[in-house]
Length: 314
Image 1 (cartoon, rainbow, N blue to C red):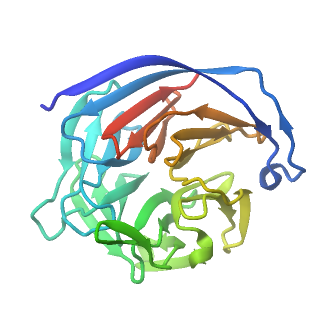
Image 2 (cartoon, rainbow, N blue to C red; image 1 turned 90 degrees about the horizontal axis):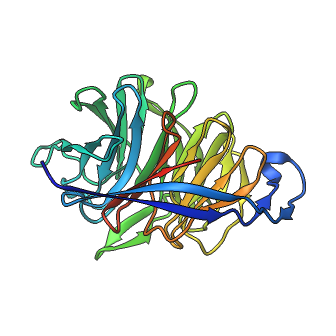
């Protein structure tokens, strides 16, 4: 078994801004000082076998966290990606639980993951890979024409799969825009793409996606914005374009959501009433996000630092 280093530390952070979001609340933006502090218990997990952990999803039935590892250039088809199983205590249960290296079905650069029933769906460059949730056995794939860098995936309430194409490709080790930026709804049971909710550079290099009762929310790394999409593709800005690079996003059961910004090492929470809290700062390269409802915990991946953080919320 590989060694795991776990470091626990209390983190006291202060909510600094409250904002009534136009798209969420349907009213004028308003700022107030918030005097309450957020107390977080942070557990840092490092493992000598981590290889750019990018995506994370909670498997509540088996009470484990599944973590995808890119293990190389994010957009290259190098056939060496893998997926781990980690316990909520931070124990590495199986570093290479899904590892098809050396086969014609190898993972390339797996990132976002989602669970539907007994299946695990993984966004991997230009394909959606499917695995049996209980065993990790390969259960098929769907590849999409005209995409270059699938980054995140989620399951809608009706069972459809939603996936983002960041519209990037690797050139001499550097990610460059391709213009294929898109958000797709996939109907796997019918063996077709389904529908395109948005396509082109105006999508801003979409990275993270969350689908739930609040709608379809998307973060972007190119335009640095967060927007909502309707099922017919109408786009409404929630956080306007900025110099930030946004990545992961996750909904919480109380109607709030959290998103990450690797460019400035922050996590931001927006509650159901539109109040914005600077939840955490100083996190190195925060990207993938998941929420453990049983422990009221956020799980954050840091591929640039080969680390995973557990943030227990108050």
